[in-house]
Image (cartoon, rainbow over the protein chains, first blue to last red):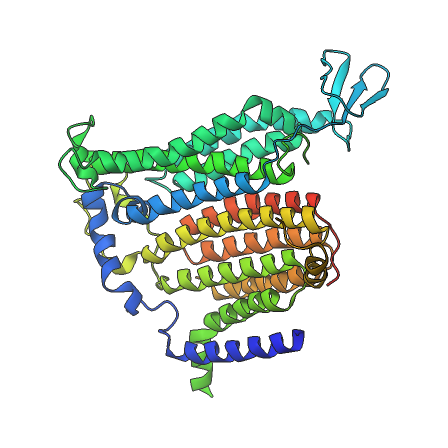
Length: 273
Length: 138
Length: 81
């Protein structure tokens, strides 16, 4: 089987290598990919949309339809992870630890949940003592990571960045909270229902901004028709792009957190890494 | 000989990208573990994205962010030449591709965890034997 | 674009890819995969695709590695081949 796979791979590789003989030279400014449509985008995007970052201008304005479906693909991925793994059964056995002496209490079955106050704490099955240095450093770092994520979303028009990158960074800050403390801290702070609503709201903001253009007189995703609604009609396309990027960021944040929580706890939302 | 050298200098990047793609394809076909197959799929995807982005590169051109438009005033002052800026269109399409690849990776990991819960293994030959014994999930 | 840097980073990328699919410990695969993503990000920066490099750095070398390690935590760590 491996030998057969190797033969097939070598044949395909040889065919592709033969095909590279037809390609234009590396770095050629007159290659066919760089001639027809991209010249129009490079020369006219700043005049029409007032956004210096050409990639964001093309992504959120000229090709906004693709980005809308990309956001819905991310939302569907979060939904699929939730549907595949989520386990709503109540876990029967629980472990509690008496903090002053270190004695461990193992409750094998039963519905009664012991109240954990200052003396007892709820414990995972594979418990390690929590490290003070990691907890303190992460606790200080997480707000700065979140401010950086919001900065990346807001400055997507002027520097490399945009909605998707900022959303992933915000999601990683939530994952950092789950890793450095434990999963229960994250789940208690941001409940599962809130994450689901956040993800759906992100997609709704994108499609909503695109759909509002139609009663205002333009076509779907035609941000220029929103000019009576904004405070600066000269920059209306840039403002429409900003709103749309915020929607993408919100959806991506929530979905990254949902996928991590469901994978690491096998759907039970109690223990984690 | 100089002809061959000129050919190599012009095209060696494409050859290395094809080699990377074939490494990913071999991992998807020939490896037994499901997670190794996933890694191979991801290597294949990023190699294709690398190839696509390299089409847009222009010699002696700068990144596709227009400097003269910063600062609030309108950018009618400077005329923009298309040959000065790297082609932004492949970047846009490949951003969508990277996003879709990470979404697929997340769902594939969830599927792998589910398969392990049911059959206690992730190796393909053992899975095939246990599928006959235990039967698929009802 | 400086061709020696390009060639060196491409060689690293190919070595990381071959190593990631050959080791028998899945945690080592996860870390090598993160290194592969980071080298790809460097390649795109060399080529001038800064948006794509930013996305790959945050997604590939960040969140993707975390998902991988989380999945290995819940399944087995050794593999036969």
